[in-house]
Image (cartoon, rainbow, N blue to C red; front, top):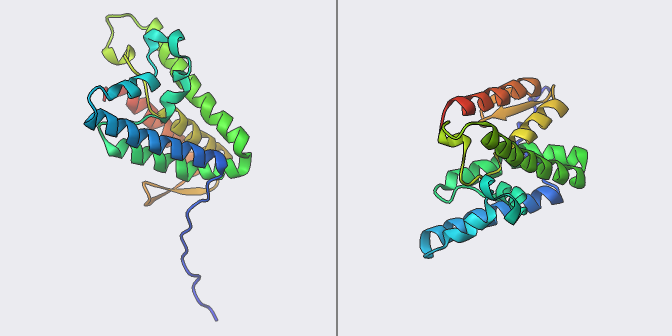
Length: 188
């Protein structure tokens, strides 16, 4: 009767808001990659959805739509973005509810893009090109915000970093901050 418990692995169940974000990101990622690769002039759709800090007012929708775009040059950017939001976002949405979670994602993308705008205006023109990007896209601001929020809400819970390394929430917070600092140091 002293049997070992069976090991079970269950994927988290995303709520409505996360499903919408994942589907929109997947569709935009595939669509813009297809257009950019196979259709002459197809990069225009990507440029219309991405955020250009030099042209903020003509397309205010870009402050949000840029957050669902991924690099049309690499499928791995799309895949890792979807995985990051899926595994950490599902528990947050379950705890917070769909509306709060959706507002949180939108606000994190908005704050991320406005931070890029502020840095591009504060840093001199002679500085590195990465401080003055022509086009900003990607869900990194949302993924970082979700990782920080998850680490705060579930400080004593464990998540498998890179699917193999078990890490507590409070440690994930510092790992996330460390990766952000590394992104500031390394230019890629």
